[in-house]
Length: 186
Image (tube, rainbow, N blue to C red; front, side):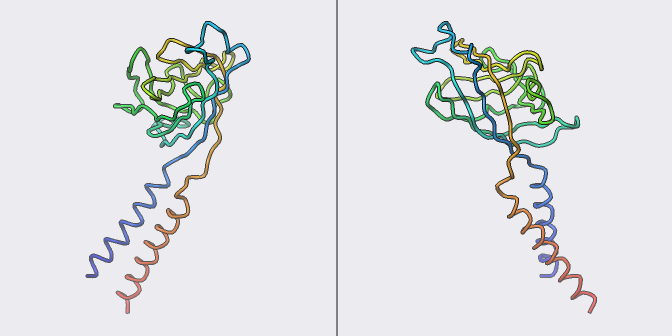
């Protein structure tokens, strides 16, 4: 019984520590005024704003995060979708005609939050690739319908929704382990 209690306490500590590596961001993609070029129309709709959340963890390279989960709401398609999962995280992969790596550089300046491979989302059967072109060139949102629009990709760090539960889990694990060690000494 004591071994089970110790294992449970250690599991709670490890689980809490693992959750501490998770990072959350919210993002928006806003087209530049020149982005509503009639040649870029999808049907009768001009590509406009997209927004959502990103969830990721630190890559081996400092300041780089591998995004492994996320959502998008695209106002052009009037639909929500999700991040296209990278089969080999942190490496360049292909879907449709897009190269992507789902990497985020949160300490970068505007235009450098994403590299030139960027993030890929799937919404209502359409792939959307958002990537960065460097600090002097706008970010770009590209649809698998061959429409492309320049704009601004911006992120805001968001508190991880489970931060409080992570803290409670770790404290419960520490309290349980301390109680077991205290009983063992007496």
